[in-house]
Length: 151
Image (cartoon, rainbow, N blue to C red; front, top):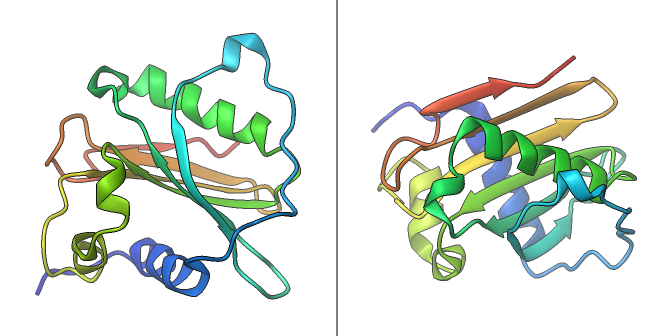
């Protein structure tokens, strides 16, 4: 069995703990025109507790967008759009069907590959930690490109 990074366990816990819980409290903020980026939010949820995490599963269909410049634009969009959220965790896919598949859970547990799973983005405004990792091509490792955006 392969070694699984800790962030994958956090994403798995987030996905299991919040599956089906919609986030009606989320207020979306205005996005500057230069920060617009096309993606589809499939699910939004929030963990419970003292330090809740606002989580999303998103789909970015255009394979040409999986590059450093566009993915940084994506992170800026998420930051601006959800400006009132302290902690954000995003799982990025290139196919909506995969979000509802058991394959993703198996991947997060280290059993199988999930080529539709393209990356992860996390932001913690309290600790000023922010990062994104993604694959340049479908089927490549989700940590093919890692960017620490923390300031």
